[in-house]
Structure formats: C-alpha cells, structure tokens
Image (cartoon, rainbow, N blue to C red; front, side):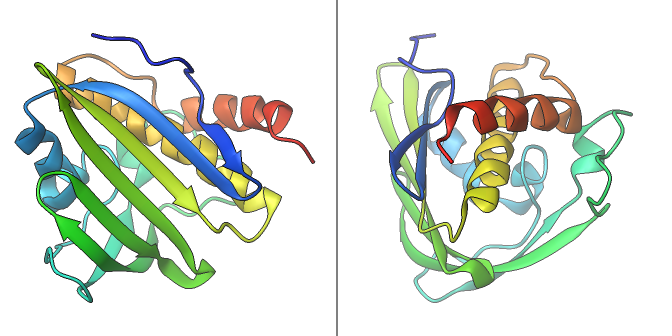
Amino acid sequence: MTAIASAHGELIEPRTVRIERMLPGPIERVWDYLTDSDLRAQWLAAGRMEQQPGARVEFVWRNDDLSEGAPRPEGMAAEHRMEVVVVRAERPRLLVLNWGPSGSEVVFELEEKGAEVKFTLTHRKMPDRDMLLGVSAGWHAHVDLLIARLGGGQALPFWENWQRLRTEYDARIPT
C-alpha cells in the first residue's frame, strides 16, 4: 500500500484534525464501510443511515466489542449513543456529517488512486482541547480498525490503542 506522509492526524486549524490513509479498494467497498450499519459497526459505530441531506442517524458505539478483552479506561461507558445528521452524501466520494451536540463536523473524502483509495477524514469545530485529544486518538484508533477490516489484517484492541494514541496526541497538540 502507498504510504501517507504522517502516521498521525494533523492539526490543520486550531480545532480541526485531519487523518489521511491509503486503503485497499475498490472505492465502493470503502463507501459501504462508511454507510452500512453492519460494516461500520466493525470499526466505528452501528446505526442505519439514509444517504440524503437532513437524515438523522443514531450512532451506537460499543468499543468493548472492538477491544477483544482489553480493559476499558475508567470513566468510559460500555455503550455510547449520539445523533448525527447527514449534511451531504455524494456516493462514493463524499460524506459530511454534523457531529452531535458539540456542533462539530466530520467530512469523509474518498479518492481512487489505482487499486487503492485515498481516505481523508477531517473533523472540524471541536470546542476544546480535551475533545480534540480524545477525538484525534479515537479517529486514529477507529481508522486503524478500518484498515485491518478492509485489508484482512489484525489491529490492536481499540482501548489499548486509544490510550496509547491519546498520550501521543497530548504530546503533539499544543496546549
């Protein structure tokens, strides 16, 4: 697979993180992992999604299911639910979501590059550094799982990876 310049997400604005990865294609398969509840639950969160502007989706995270026995950090719930709203859905290249009560926005961009797909995730308008750290580590760990699911590989258990990455992002993101 083609390498991306940084293994970590990059702070592109004070409250915006961007993560880029090269994924195995085809692009339609990657799109399905973003929009199909059963496939998305394997790496992120379940929730039936209508791919039209204004559609409301209840995402349901069960990160313990992604962790294969790794302990959940103190203070983290076994299940988390959040309503997101589809802002734009242009199959199979662009998905924009209003990300829950924080008012932040998540943009998924997919671009074919031969047999691979350039995957760009941008999370904008996070209200504070604490959310920025947790979300950066969370997206990074979830995308690691997506890569493993698409490529047939093995990823670190979610919680173990998230805790390590949160420490790394804390050192990388200015206070």
